[in-house]
Length: 144
Image (cartoon, rainbow, N blue to C red; front, top):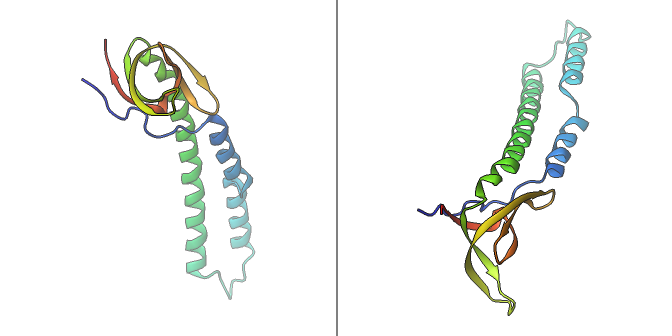
């Protein structure tokens, strides 16, 4: 039974994920944000306190920052799992679109002989008779 579109989405490399993480951490961090908010609240004028809407907006920004941090951690974990789960393709028959020497695109099938990880392309499958095929180009998988 074929599994279609096994890797239709191009994976993010570990460098891309680390860059996203650095972008979040270069912004105002969680601890710095809380210190700034506490300082702002403790130094405000008691006769003219902070507007409720402004306070809610700042709390929403803090919540968004926390969610982005958690999402980055989750994506890094998923990328790492994808890296190691690609080993399960060894010994399976895969279908993919192959560019023939004459430039025509053809549907081809082959057996996965080895798997390794490329930092730019993600998991790479060594397909018998066709060479290196990135996982995201695989259209279907069959067990032998």
